[in-house]
Length: 463
Ligand SMILES: Cc1cc2nc3c(=O)[nH]c(=O)nc-3n(C[C@H](O)[C@H](O)[C@H](O)COP(=O)(O)OP(=O)(O)OC[C@H]3O[C@@H](n4cnc5c(N)ncnc54)[C@H](O)[C@@H]3O)c2cc1C
Image (cartoon, rainbow, N blue to C red; front, side, top):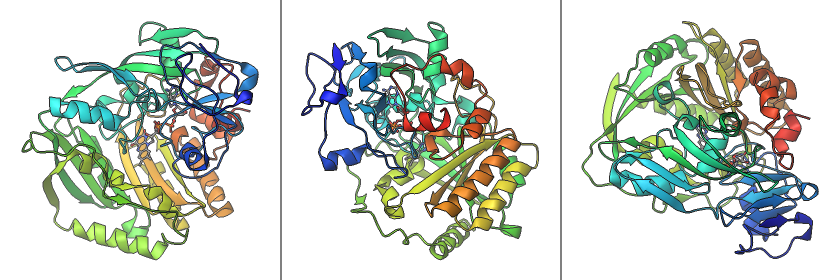
């Protein structure tokens, strides 16, 4: 039994008697417990390693609040728990079973998507949905109900979870599926780690002909053209996404490069996750990413797509996870960190709301790289799932302080006005009112929150 009382913290290390003991990591280790954007910073009071999935979780309410923490690939504070106790899920790193005939895979929640790919790609299977980094845990992918480039066909990650086990702070355990404990399942998928600890989960993989992706890139000019390309793709193009010039205004507003991809047989040679050759050694001075350099990059990138169509084959890593090649690229934004802002807005034929948002971003001269995608109409299973039909825009913004906060507040207002939502996995500052407007099922969700669990994000948006 885990009978954790974080106030009696002692040197850490998993023990058979429980999934973990309250633990003080040394300073370099504590660095692991920050979020990807580096903003805001938060200091947990203690960290409990979760080592054994079958050890009952019994957490004392007064010793908390508790929050699962995995790879910290959330950008803002949804994975942070300032002053509270983090449940480190990475020791839960075992595969439970994989059936190469059916593609059903069960694994502990700390297993990463990279580890899953290493196991299943050589056997002809792939993740049903993948975010833009594979350094994400299975539990984290479920708790944010992540989406990928195939949302228009596959919907969100949670649609492919066939079952999961949830450990609650009172020592109880529940097997949840879309039909058994269905309401708890719906609260846990996209539930931001607040309904308890996911100990393991089972997902349905998809078959692939080989490890490569056949891709095609097409330039487009403006949001209307982006929508035409997005809405006219079919099953032959399971993956689509666009890079949009975040600084283009006037005739350059909404221009970009549209990427299509499909699994291909390839030549049979492929490289697993392996070590990444590039790694930023330190936090760079925050002025390094400057508007002039980014504008120049955008010009070169757009010009490089000069031919109307480009077809190529790429390793799946290059197509799905281009940013993973540079480990710690987030540090290029310096010590003040950066924010990612991601919204979804419903669209008509012109994409007017998204266009207005892009124009405002471009005017700010802070928006460098925007990624756009049209979400399809496959319903997301979670009460707090972010994906819904509409245009989603994601943008990285350097943390320049108050000026940025005012801009994002204004953009939130445009999103709410349009009937859209802000993505909690990327958020560090939205208001309680914006959160409520984004998630109409919030009240239904509330009753599933484990009384001993909370997060910096939850305390901020749901005071
Ligand atoms: C480069 C990059 C690209 C990205 N691209 C996308 C994208 O395309 N689409 C998208 O949707 N997201 C994307 N993301 C966001 C990322 O996929 C999510 O934030 C993901 O949830 C992070 O998983 P994690 O394992 O790092 O979890 P963490 O960030 O550590 O935690 C995330 C949440 O999951 C909860 N949690 C973690 N483990 C458990 C568990 N075992 N039980 C219960 N709750 C748990 C935590 O409490 C927290 O609320 C991207 C992030 C990066 C850095």
